[in-house]
Image 1: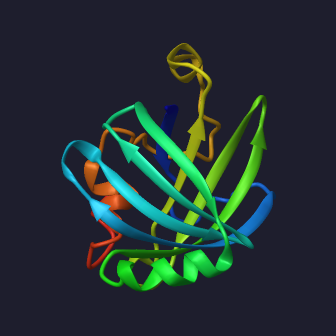
Image 2: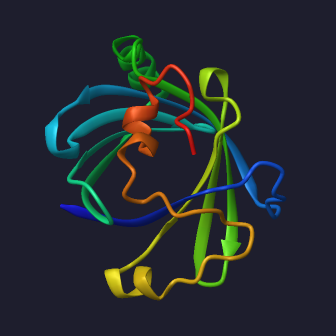
Length: 156
């Protein structure tokens, strides 16, 4: 089992985000279960994957399997009612990468940034840069699994 240790923050409206690598992301959920369980397919640039996660909070179980473009296309219709469309910018920040998502469509106006860590101590020691907004790691309404079925961005 893989483990994901991640903190999530809002990016305030009008805040400048540093330059980084950019990708288009299409993400759809096949399963949204209890206790944070989820199975999703994602196309990020030309890379496709199937990811299964479980748990809530800072540390979650995570498994990721590469998919071909054909496999992604076969699974995509099953996600019709739970999708996210966003652009992603990966910004170097010291030993970490800040992953900034700018949401489109019904979630337009929402920007979040996530940082992954190797262990909980590194996560606790992390000092966000000034362009990060409030931390939302523990807000279920700002998890992608919930945003995929939301009619509009949550009130921040």
